[in-house]
Image 1 (cartoon, rainbow over the protein chains, first blue to last red):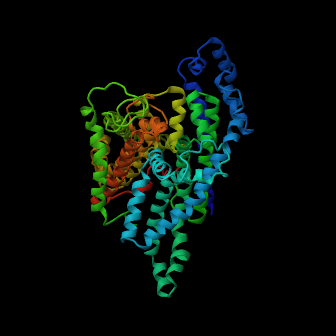
Image 2: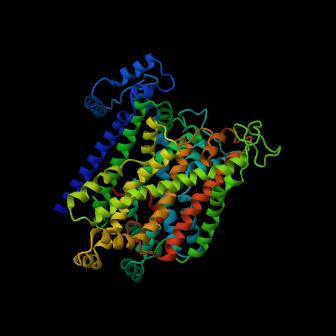
Image 3: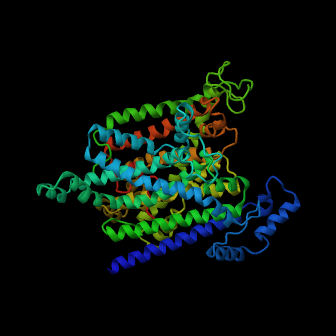
Length: 317
Length: 286
């Protein structure tokens, strides 16, 4: 038990270090600006008033460590600073755009689990047969395809040729739930990569589990095939997949940025891309901290849970 | 555990090779056949001497397609090579040193960096630096270093624990000969497997970054940029979007199928870390 305790402590420590690293890295951005940060950020309108305003807003005259302390302290009370472009607080940007992104992400995760596990079990059940070959080849192929290319092709087929679904979410604002048809393609595109990876993982560990002695023993006792598969083999096969599920958050984030750009959905990804284009550093920093910390915390949670339920699984820390 | 797709490799190998050939040949040889730019026509038109119509500023889409593959492929290959250039020495030293503090100093910071999502890192840097194609290659290489170094270290640590390495050490062979001559040579095959998978992931990242406008000029001849910029005319002139999108799909899909088939066919003694091709790129263990 002490082994588990010290492992958890080390994993928590790593999580803390990762959080601190994310905050430091994001802060280091303004320091990394070549020359005078205010001049660099003023960009297209380098008039003295604008430069002075940027300098004032970012408090560039104060030493870096004081600004870091202030900024990190503010983060603790969800104070992310103010936008350079609009002067609005960054927190307001976050809360405005939070809804659509959360909707997209949660819909994807809810559909991801049954789709990925179902396909994986199906392929494992017919291992080596045409169904398995088809599922394996398709998941392997689609896994590597960038979301924007897949999305654009889906739009061409389903919105342009067949006319079944709207090509973008333009005009629906943040009220996406009221227009479910507009959500079909974005969620489909977001699902494409995580489903493939989850399916491949479940298939591999399911084949392992089905070949194990305890499954053979259960079969000898005459336990029904479906019961062996779902009650005995599947729980063992799903443990490694649970960790993979948390990893997918990393690329769900990637996917969300692309999908929101592609389907013009006013979520966090769109806010981030706009801020990057306008060099609105405080907004980019706020979003980066939120995204980074969410990733760290989810991975930490997944590792702790996986370690609790399957201590055999090697989790590096 | 059985490797994915064992016994189905031949068909998949051919499929992957065919899929990857078309975009790859087009990307590498296309610019030689592109010819001089013709006069600009109206935006988003079809026919009128343009086989695939015109794009958002009235350029010939066929010519842009011929030109647009090379940047994607060249940036991806460069980034993969650069990532290994850093990861190889770091991983080898980490695996072969007997000084615990040196290993920790090299590997622990990478564990911490693994936590930052790759695209987020690229976007962060793009905010302040507006990188060109070379900058994009450097950035993509940078976000791949932590993971690649971990794989090199794991593979090298496996080899370094073998009696042969102990024997070499006891014979008084120099560190260089043991590290590069023996261990370096022994991990070439698992590394080749990893390089294939990594290239697929890098292609994905490079194309996605270009689509989001990072590391490219707004009117660059680049398949990903073409998809982005010509989207506005999708309903008038779909070819300007569909052709580059299909080429990117074929390139990434074929690359992954080919790597997987090659991996199962040659039966590389894959280290546990390198296994599970389809899930490798982002399956990170902090």
